[in-house]
Structures are given as C-alpha cells and as structure tokens.
Amino acid sequence: MPDVNIALGTMGFGTKVDAAASWDLLDRFADAGGTMLDTADCYAFWSDPNGRGGQSEEVVGRWLARRPGRRERMYLSTKVGAEPVGPGEWPANRQGLSAPAIKAAAEGSLRRLGTDRIDLYWAHMEDRTVSLEESAGAFGALVAEGTVGRLGCSNHPVWRVERARGIARANGWAGYTALQLRHSYLQPRPGVPVPGQDHRFGWVTEEVADYVDSDPEMSLWVYTALLNGFYSRPDRPLPDAYDHPGTSRRLAALDQVAGELGVSRNQVVLAWLIGGRPAATPVVGVSTPDQLDEALAGARLSLPDEHRRLLDETV
Ligand SMILES: NC(=O)c1ccc[n+]([C@@H]2O[C@H](COP(=O)([O-])OP(=O)(O)OC[C@H]3O[C@@H](n4cnc5c(N)ncnc54)[C@H](OP(=O)(O)O)[C@@H]3O)[C@@H](O)[C@H]2O)c1
Image (cartoon, rainbow, N blue to C red):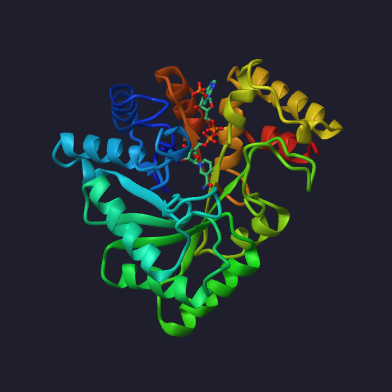
C-alpha cells in the first residue's frame, strides 16, 4: 500500500481549476508523497464550450512533462466510456465500450497524458449495446501489448463485473481487478436519486463491500468521499436522499470522534474509508492547497479501534 493512500481527483483540472493552480496542487501532492492520480478522457466535457473533455488529461500530461523522472513516480489512472463523441444528448452520445472506441480512447489518453503507459485503465460506465466479450477483449489486448498495467471498472453492477472477469479468465485475458464507486460515511436512502450522481450502479453497497472483501485481487477506489465539501461547509447542503435519522446519528458520531482526536470531520471520513473493511482508496477532488492539506492529513490519520467501532456501529 502506498504511503499516501488517496488518489488526487483531477476532474476539474484545466476547466474549473486553471492550469497554473492545477500544477501547484499536483506539485504539492507529489511533494507530500502522493503518487496516485485519477482522471478520465471525458473530464470535464460539461465545463467545455464545445462539450468535449480532455482538458484534465492535458493538464496532467503537461505537468508530467515539466520535470524528468516525474512520470515514473506517479501512478496514472484514467477512464474510457463516457466522453461525448457524436451529436445528441449525453449519455446516449457517449463513446461507449466497443473495441474500436476503447482502442481510440486509449490512444487519445496516451497522447494527452504524454506517456506510453496507463497504470490503471477504467471502464467509466456501462455500455450494454456491445457484448462483454468485445469490451473485455479490447481491454485485455491493451494489457497484453503493455499499454495498460491494470484494468478497473467503474459504475457497473457486481454481476456484470464478475461476468466480464469470467470471460477474461476463460480467454486468458487480463480482467478487472479494481472497482471505482461512490462512497462516504453518510449514506443516502436506498433507491432515492441523488442529483449529480448519474450512475445507477455507482454505489458501494453491502454486496460490493462483500465482493471486494472476499477477493484479495480486487481493490476499491471511492469517489465523492467528501460529499463535495458538505462535511465542513454550510454552502454545500446534502441532497434530500440523505434526509433520514441515520444521517443525524452518524454526524453526531463523526463529531464525537473528530472532537476527541482533535481533527476535522473530513480527516475522520477519509481515515475511516482507508482503514475500513473493505479498505478503500478515496479519490479526493480539491481546488485549493488547504483542501489538499486536509485530505493529506486524513490519509495519514489512523483511527483508534474504539473510534472506528463507534463509527461502524452507528447506523
Ligand atoms: N468514476 C466516476 O464516475 C467518478 C465520478 C465522480 C468523481 N470521480 C473522481 O473522484 C474525484 C472526486 O470527486 P468529486 O469532486 O465528485 O468529490 P469530492 O472529492 O467529494 O468533492 C470535491 C470538492 O469538494 C470540495 N472540497 C474538497 N475538500 C474540501 C475540504 N477539505 N474542505 C472544503 N471543501 C472541500 C471542493 O469544492 P470546491 O472546489 O468547489 O471548493 C472540491 O472540489 C474526481 O476528481 C474524479 O477523479 C469519479
């Protein structure tokens, strides 16, 4: 496990966060020992006047190019499947997971990142218009040729992940060994839509937790772990789906633990995720140095057993 077990989420880099500020954040993260970066070829098409992504990968790529030796120290993760490629509305116009789409997207990501290898390549979202065999074969081919180190799967139901892995195994191809899903300490009411969360199967459920926990090969990365700043900011209200008694109980437990340890809620949430069962790597989005420092402090915090027990047992 890396010393700093968070990945820096770069979704807003090059759009919401300008290039200079993004590079400062990347420098600060790397100087603090951070190694894992998360991006996607579609980041951030919704902030682009032409409705196309690639800005985040470009900013990361130009940062990597600025100092020799930096690429070798970083673990690069990017995604394919969600970039808009045609006319019409997203998500219908997304590139999807056909073999030609995966091949072309990987070439584009490598070019923008200025590298010859993606360490961890994610299927960003499902594409049920193509067979799992086709997607699994295309991903496996990237690993076989050395372009990709490892494969992950985001926002897919467990049964599809397991079926795709079975297909890969039967054909001697590399298969998915990482999941990226949304997770935090507070939980929404099951089945209630959360605005901004487009992915029906994008949540860490009991079934996902059991799946990851039972398979030593499988890693879990979790996004929106800080609920876009909710834990520390009154200007970031919780969506209605979190309006239930468990939220008040968990916030009280969080405040008790944070108070007793003299740390912030955000730090406790990250430490709880990192050291939990299953252990997770939070993908944290930040736009200021203070936010990054708080995330790094959370990654370094180890929760005493009695505090973890209190957090776990409060539902
Ligand atoms: N696989 C997927 O489908 C998927 C989906 C979403 C995200 N992701 C990945 O996960 C990363 C993070 O996701 P996210 O941006 O949705 O969630 P997040 O990390 O919960 O939220 C990030 C935002 O929260 C605020 N924030 C962060 N730390 C803070 C702190 N210490 N104090 C106060 N406010 C703080 C900042 O808002 P301001 O910048 O407005 O200040 C920051 O931009 C993305 O960059 C991306 O790499 C993946």
